[in-house]
Length: 279
Image 1: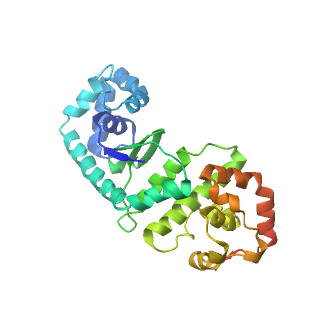
Image 2: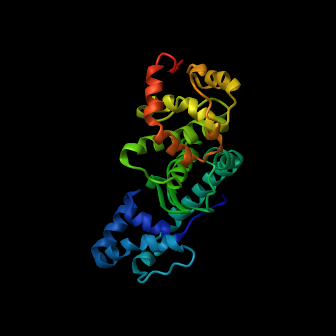
Image 3: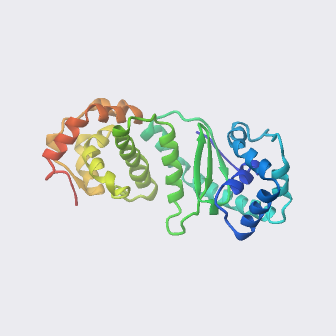
């Protein structure tokens, strides 16, 4: 998967107009346009999908509102800020490209399209995965945890490229994607276990799935103890049959395996609850 990080005028302006007002200046500009060109403002709401289909060659049916924003003295400043933000995100992505490639090829095991990361102002606080290969990103980079934005982006990519399940089964998908991105991928990037990270409500399910997750990763049974000590999750190795076929699956096939076998996996884990625990 190759990625392009882009600041595009129409994507940026659309999100400034229909996203949160990121400054008093933008709020007043939006209000002024609304007061004077209400019909035109309403009409461009539907432009988003068309812009994202072919942002390079997009030409609006009516460019009145777009031109007003482009000609505003503050827009150039906002675009420069978006360009600087683009560089910051691109540097984080490029620095960790090797591990991201590993995530895709060896953990998700999915062939993904090339991606356009369409960068807007970080104050808009959005990650919008609009279609198969375009993602809009505009979120603060945490100074203490700059890799957080990388995890957020890859979680969205993983979600987008695994099919939706019935509501009762979506929890399996969410738990397994967390295991893939927030836990294993983050562990590889940081060099320390991140298996205690994630949504608290998913932690019990992730502990139940953990023995099978190690099998999915292709960890030999004789190395389970090392992984358990690394991740501070303990289970009785001898009570679990090693499912060799799991390491041949992709992430979607593994989700479906867990859904098919959910009664067995959860019942087994609950029966051994004294053996599956966090240290």
